[in-house]
Image (cartoon, rainbow over the protein chains, first blue to last red):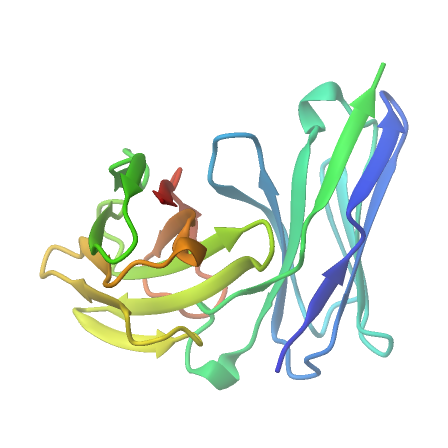
Length: 114
Length: 114
């Protein structure tokens, strides 16, 4: 079955860039997503990328996809304390009939220090 | 526009009991998905409903069931509760659940089984 892996923890200083990495196993993944979860809250979609793209930039966020290595990364420029949260990588594919069935990674806790 | 609402937010039940959780999607959204989040297993897909029909299902035992009403509101039911069912249950809604149709997550219902 599908598997999505992430490192558990990342600590960065305010103002630095953060890079959160993710690897996945499903070669038929169609969409890859990054979600953010703050304490006591649900998941917020930050950005997504189609599997036929290499890169996507959205303001402070840059997503890089290496399809050959099945590696996805999220770069947050000028990281702020408000970026402290858990970040989940997720994938879906249309082989399941819909794109609603998301397979999530384990989540990376980002800690931003002053 | 109001977000996805889930009720109740917190619930404590005893082993062997059953529980019903409710999810009201964003107005106009017809797809509702449910996820279970635990520290050990992470975020796992339970099922998805669209137009009152279960369209996709994850790998959970038959004790987990759901339904969707004509107004797109959804309920999930867990019968014969086990300690391992303690989790945060998240629901997400989207217009159709296809393509890159963004899923909006509710804050979740935290279920504790004692």
